[in-house]
Image (cartoon, rainbow, N blue to C red; front, side):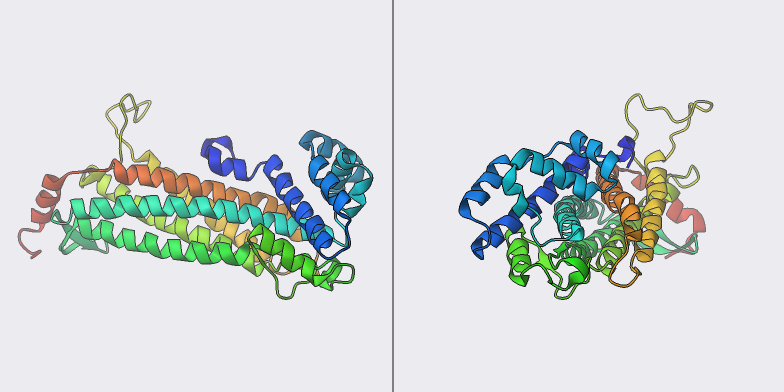
Length: 353
């Protein structure tokens, strides 16, 4: 994701450094699991834990030769560890590390999204009570219908955000799943107990049956869930845009001191933040479509999903984090004109009652 829409905390979850750190956590947990099963000597475990490290630049350098990022990473770890590195990645295949590491990143990113949703829901609830008696005209088909209150509109949004919080929690838990079942998922070179112990230590679930990868229906459901949250953000901010139209002017997004509306028309106060949310929501929906395309892989796996996921999973989390925090600020600073709402209610000359 471009820096413009990347907030520091979420961005840090998806750096190359963070990605490889998650890989290392998986590898170290596997070494400890093999040790508990009596395969890896205690001394080797201590040496690996003390020396295991990586350098992102060095991994990239090695990958220029190997053309394989996992082998490049493991080669760099071995450079730090020495002879005991023979126990690192023992019995595993690349996807054991990749998918389980991704699960850790998904869990961490999901926690940030959950916090964002709680913050947005809290602001919506507070402002709903603030405007519970502020009457405005309700509109259907864009036409005056019956009176409502602005608090009712905000309350409706608050409950929708609450539903999304529940959905995100379920979707993250379903996608934050690892696997250490080896090549084609048949446990030919790895004890199933290693998988169970590693995932338990890391605080994630594991596939009851996998092939060489965690099944991508999980990730497709996650990105569809994130896109759904984005659709609600667009729904709310689209409504604000309509209410900010010159002939309506019932509510306006915050307009900061020194902010400019137009290079040619300085009198304008445009709903640019709300419009930005609409554009971002479109990207989320596009990413969800890519995730759906990733579900169907050849036989026990191919890697056609990999190149796409490196883009759409981080970008969806980063973009939604940005959208939720911006929308919370919009709702927090929303300027509401109760007098204009009453004036608009009277435009139908008492046909609305």
